[in-house]
Length: 284
Image 1 (spheres, rainbow, N blue to C red):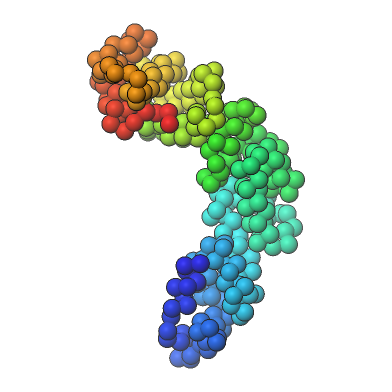
Image 2 (image 1 turned 180 degrees about the vertical axis):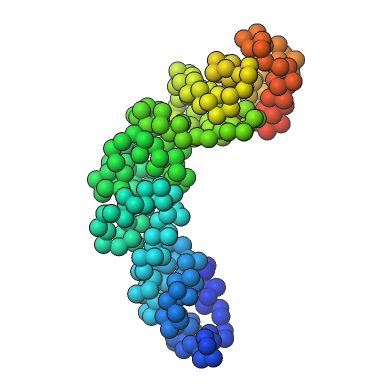
């Protein structure tokens, strides 16, 4: 509630058009006497928790903190999915957008415990449809979902949604392959999700296809990208494993990788090696 406390520190009364805005006994100005658009602009700086606390603690603010404009903006800022499907959500007769916010917040909590139940809760409340592309859009745009549960849901339960999820990734003009692969695999923490070699292979295949689609480069086919990605994973394991004393050198990495990707330039592979050596493995 830091923003509310910051407001509470204001000592001088608020002046609007030459008049003084009366203060309550707690020393806070009564913002309900301000023009509505000004009061809403002030309260738009609060997050959901602060907004609820402000409405409970400050009697004169209780009604304005329930305003639908505030809560609709909070919904769209917390869950970009709502902004993408705003028209459909607006068609539903919500009692208030505060209720919608609380429903989506509850769904996020349920998802962190049981991903299947979390999506089912959203569908039961008419927020997300049963279409794989719609579920994928929700998952892809909801950055607060736990990666472990996201991985479990996509890989272990809904590979049709996984296909749609990867299609939402945009790798256009992202030429540094290790960085792109590392960012992609952050959605699928292998250790926590207990991914098998088959699962990792599947993810690499789908990633490679999407990467080549976004970056059609001569000499970089889907199979070539897949082989480079696999080599990068092995390199990361080699460089970080405590029991491996003789670490793979850059020359060895280039030689081994070019056995399966002879068409790839040596400098390209050298830069890829440097990236993993300096930044870290692509699989966390």
